[in-house]
Length: 413
Image (cartoon, rainbow, N blue to C red):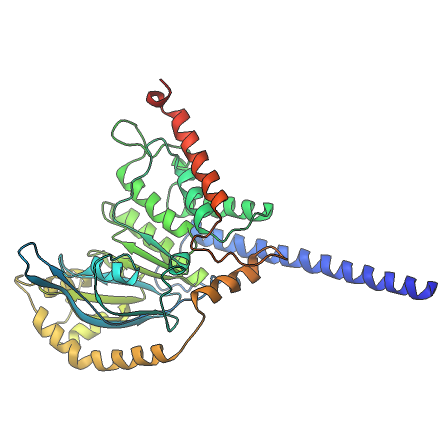
C-alpha cells in the first residue's frame, strides 16, 4: 500500500510539473505574440507588405447583406429613395472602403449593416450565415461614428481604458488587466497619441488635445473594444493626409493581425491610403446605387474595361468621384451602374447566395468560444446583453464621474 501511495505521489508530482511547464510555455508564447503585435502597431507596414495573422486572433465574423435598401419619408409625405437594393459579402480580416459622392447613402449603408439604423429599411443582413442577434450583435461589433462627445476633463488614456473595460469579455484576472494596459499602450502608439496620453480631451471651456487628435481618440476607442467587426463612419474626416494614412495603417494591422472585419466610410483618400484597403464599394447618388464592389487592386482595370481608363499620375479615387458624381463634368454614373448590373451583379449575387448557404458560429457561439480560449477556468461565458456585469459598469462609471468632477474647478466650487 505504501509503495502504491508513493507511486501515485510521483505521478501527481510529474503531472503538476508538466502543467506548470505548459503554463510557462503558453505564457511565453503569449508574450511573444503580444510583442509582435505591438511592433506592428508601432510601425505599421505599407501597402503590399503582408501581415501575418496572430495565432490567437479574435473570433472570425463574415458579413453578408442581400437587397438592402432604404426609403425616407419627407415632411410633405412624399417618399425618397436614399439607397436602392444592393448586395454584398465580406470575409473576416478584410479592410473595406465604402466610397461615393455626398448623398449616395454611404453612412446609411454602414448604419444598416451595423444595426444602428432606427428607421425601417428593407433587406437582410447575416453574420456567419445567421441573422443578426438583436441582443448579442453589439457584443461582437463596434461602431465609430462621425461625432463622439467625450467629457472635457477626461484624459486620453482613460477614454481608451473606458471602452476596453466595458466592451471586452469580462475577465477579472490580474494578468488580463495587465494585458489591457499593454494593449492600450500599443493603441496610443499606433494612433500617434502617446505624447498626449495624459492630456485632457478638452472642450469649449477646457484646453485639451487638437481636433485631429480627438478624431484619432474616437477611432482608437472603437479599436479598443476588440470586436470581430468594426464599423467606422468617416474616421479620417478633419485629419491631415499623414494622420489619415497613420490611422488607416493601424486599422489594417488590426484587420490582418486579429482577423477583424473593418468597414470604413471614407471620402476620397489619397493614393497611398487607398492602396491599404482590400475591398472597395463604390456608390453613386440620386438615388444611391452600387457601381462597383470588388478588390481595390482591380478597380482601376475595371474602370478601364468600362471605357474610363485612369490617366498616369492621377489619383484613381479622384477619378472615381468625378465619374460617380451626378451633374459633374465627367459624370458617368448611369453608365457605370449599368456596367455593374451586367459585369459584376450576377457574380456578386452568386457569392451572396453561397455565403447565405454556409452557416458558421452564431454570436452566442463566438462569445463562448472566445471565453474558452481566454476566460478564467471554472467559469462560464458571460452572455448578457452587455460585455460586463452591472457592478463593473457601475464601478467604471462612478470612477469616471469622480475623476472628472474632482478635476473640474466649477464643479468643486
